Image (cartoon, rainbow, N blue to C red; front, side, top):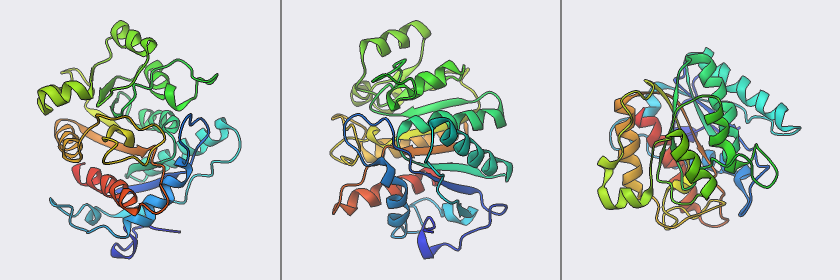
Length: 279
């Protein structure tokens, strides 16, 4: 098994680690480019090239445990149950689940387990897409519907960097007052455009769809959209949000490696490690 950060970091036992890396190579509903099932292992392999110091500190000092990859065979219900069990196990050990996807649909299972542990939580979503369709291509469990499923759980959502969504999603945002800051507004107004509502829950889960980043930085994803976040915009926003609220877990999803372009593999691994540093 490949451990996050490779040989640089002595793997911690589950009861000693703060960060529990949970690879979930799930891919079932991708609708354009493919390859997210290879994302977790590729990120783990690239993480061996990371420096321990992230520019602010050494997140690895908190201890990292890399769990076996979740078995993604069988029905969606079976896979979701395994994801929930893996996340619940990390939380029961006192750790923070760091889930590596896989397509974005899996986040609903992760969030369900986190909410069962903490009660009222909010989800901060970095994404090019709103993912609020009630169904897509005949499935309510599509990657394009994941945030609708979370919204249906009664969990508050805050969306950052969105720039591609349909009228159904636009209407739902307005009807249900789902707060968001589109990428275009961020470009025009700067980072201060992002302000979590005063009543947003104290405990948050961050879901980072890697297509939130601009396609010039991160084309290795199934549905890239131009006009996304710059590298430092993303880092600064995650860091600020983690100062304002208590992050209790996060995922990085929708990474689809491109053969021969290891710079993108490394960027995905660095993103994961930098978010660890922020929390």
